[in-house]
Image (cartoon, rainbow, N blue to C red; front, side, top):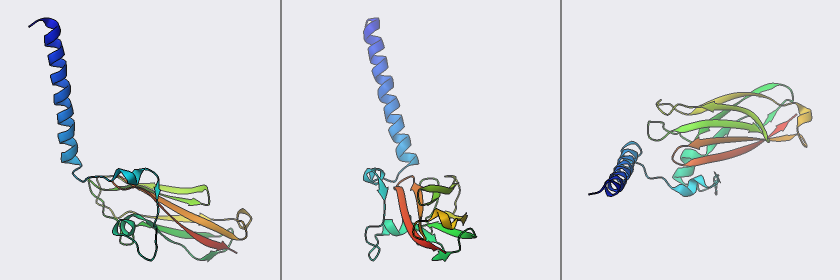
Length: 159
């Protein structure tokens, strides 16, 4: 065997072995199959009257007062899912984010190693003059490593 043939064979063998090792490692550490269509855009609840189990477990739930006084602080609770999303080393929530309209209000990052219940509490102050017609929309987003980006919104009145 000449040197060129040996090097080609060694290179192909190394590449094949590396690829196989990566596939085996990925299946061992991430055994859950992922629906890649969930990563193509922002996921939202399609029919609030008939939510799917995926929507119930991933759509952010925003708890905020229906009306607030302009310039005074109030709290907004954001949970992931109707019954809090479980967290573990294979399936976790990366972050929860809150926006007031299009303006960022806060973001909470989570660790993938912790066995947490992903929930965030934000203290928000909205000046009356920052609203259009006395209303504003709170928008919460969360990102799940297996199910992509999810978003929910709620309108509140600013008095």
